[in-house]
Amino acid sequence: MSHDHAHHDHQHHGSDLSPVEARVRALESLLTEKGYIDPAALDALVELYETKVGPHAGARVVARAWVDPGFRARLLSDATPAIAELGIGGRGGEHMVVVENTSETHNLVVCTLCSCYPWPVLGLPPVWYKAPPYRARAVIDPRGVLAEFGVRLPDTTRIVVWDSTAETRYMVLPMRPAGTEGLSEEDLAALVTRDAMIGTGLPGSVPASPLDSPLEMPA
Amino acid sequence: MSDPSPKAFAAPWEAQVFALVVSLKEAGLFTWTEWAERLGREIRPAGDSERAADYGAWLATLESILAERGVAAAETVAARTAAFLRAAEATPHGQPIRLENDPLYRP
Image (cartoon, rainbow over all chains, first blue to last red; front, top):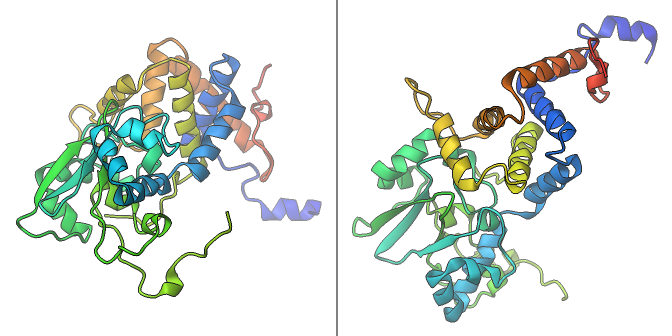
C-alpha cells in the first residue's frame, strides 16, 4: 500500500473495537494478569462449544432410546448415567432429567429464571430460548407458543411445562415418528432436531426417497 | 420465533464471555446455582422490563460478581476498557489491537 493511498483512503486510521468488545478484552487482560484464567484454555473452550458440543449428541441419545427399550427405561429413570453410557456428559449436564412425549402428553422445556439448558446433549441455547417472550409465555400459554413454532397438537394432548434450573436441566424424548421401523439408529438420529428435544418441535419425517439416506461409511 | 441455525455464538466476543464464565466457575469463583441466580437478577432490573439472558447480560453479571468479590473493581475495569478503546484507535486497521498501542500506556 502506497503512502498516498494510506492518506486519502482512511478517514478513520484506527481499528474498530466496539464498547462491548473493549469490556471483554479488559476483563480478559485483567484476569490473565491476576492468574485467574489462561487464554489458551479459553480458546480451547470456545473451540469445543463451536465445533463439538451440540444437539447431535442429544439426537444420538433419542435414537438409542427409540431402538433400545432397556436404555430408554434407564434414561427415563436416571438420565445422567444413562447418557454417560454414550460417552456424553460434563458441565451443564450434572443432573439431567429426560421427559417422554406420548400420545397423551407433550413436554415443553423452558428456563423461566434465565437460560439453564442441558449443554452436553443440546449445546448452547438458541437466542429465543433466552428471550423474555419465550420464558414468560411457555408457562402461561404453551399451546400458543407451540403454534408459533408450527406444532399443532390434538386438543386432548396434555402439555406439561418443565422449568430447568442450574441444578436440574430437562430434555424431551420425542415420540418416534410413524413409518421409521426400517431405519438404522444413525438414520433415526438424523430425524431428531434440537427443537424436538426442547419440545418446541417434532422429529422430522422419514426421507421420501432412499437416496436421501446418508452414505454408509466404512467402520 | 425459531431460528434454524444452531450456531453457538453470534460474535467472537460472545464466545469469549462464555469461556470466561466457564473458566471462572471451574476455578471455583462461583457455582452454577449462584451464577443462574445472579444472571436472573441482572435481567430483571428494578422498575424496568425483563431482558434477554443473552451474552450481554452474562458480561454485566460477570462484571458485578468480579467487583463484589474484589477480583476486579468497576473503576479498574472501566480504566482498562478505555485503554483498549484508545489502543484500538491507535492501531492501524488489520493489525492486532494490543494494550501497548494505547498512547497513554505505561508498563
